Every structure is written in C-alpha cells, then in structure tokens.
Image (tube, rainbow, N blue to C red):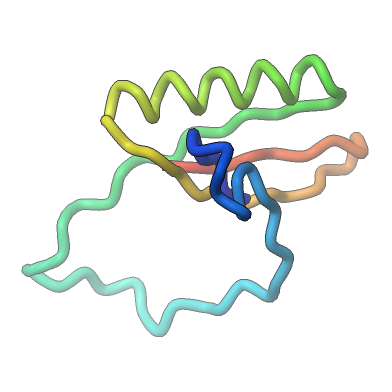
Length: 85
C-alpha cells in the first residue's frame, strides 16, 4: 500500500498485491542504518481506515516525506493491519 500526497500521481493512495519475498538473512551489515520501528494501524471499516490515513499523513508531514509504503495483513477478525515505518 502506498499513501501519497500528490493527487496528480496515477498511483496516489494505491494498493499493490504481490508475494512478499523472504530476506536472505537477518544479519545487519555495519553500513546499514538501524531499522525504524514499525507502526501498526488496525482499521476495521471506512471511518477507522480514514483515521489510519490521517495518522500516516501526520507521520509523513513530521518526516517531510511525500509518500510512504505499508504492508497490509488480513486478521482473523476480518479486519486488516497496516504496518509502515
């Protein structure tokens, strides 16, 4: 999932579906920065999804980013988790 502020972009607030590739190893090299902690939002309807997008946009504003990517995982309660950095 990608959330982007530019409404003229064809991929503005898009969802791409694909297979997640496994990382080759969990070993971090010295040159790699420490990973950012994951942020999770659990929308379960239109209003909670809109609230999640607002929260993501606040983070984007705070980090001065124009877009952010997230993974979506379906949960047993028929809702989803958005996980982003």
